Length: 213
Image 1 (cartoon, rainbow, N blue to C red):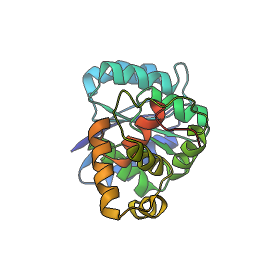
Image 2: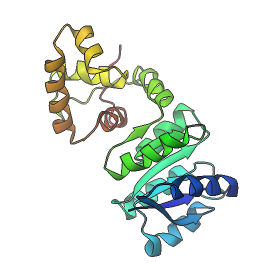
Image 3: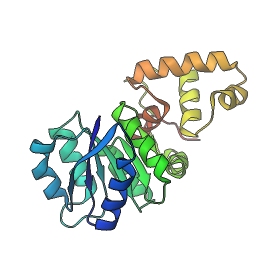
């Protein structure tokens, strides 16, 4: 059973999420808070598996709260659910340690799947936000290869992941086989210590690993 805490100052949003999660046999809302401070105060008693956090909160914002929660409760997953699709909010949330970033106009099924994914240790981004990362990486001026020991080909494959390409599309772009791409992706996951494509993308952006075009 996945326990969830909802942190949002809008009752309608909290009630809507509770209704959605009530339909899932493996989820239950263990707590809710109207502010970051309230959520942090409740954490020792609730200890949820996943915290769904808005960014625009009274007092401490959701990004600051995510950083506090991930530092004090590293096993708790933080899924940002916000109306903001701005680059600066996305990057700030990822750097704070958020495990996922969704927009509030996401379908309810996507929210449910995102909760399950971050609970499994994966990282989730709204598709439109993944596209934003393609533009953000172009501003990166430094590629940290020495820390991960990725090969040139693995960096090319990683760039394909950031661009949201499938294994087949990466293979066609690099003129290699699908099987070879799969092998490279597996090696990238191992070297970056991640378990999913989304985690690899987030890691790459957080650590400025994607080269300039």
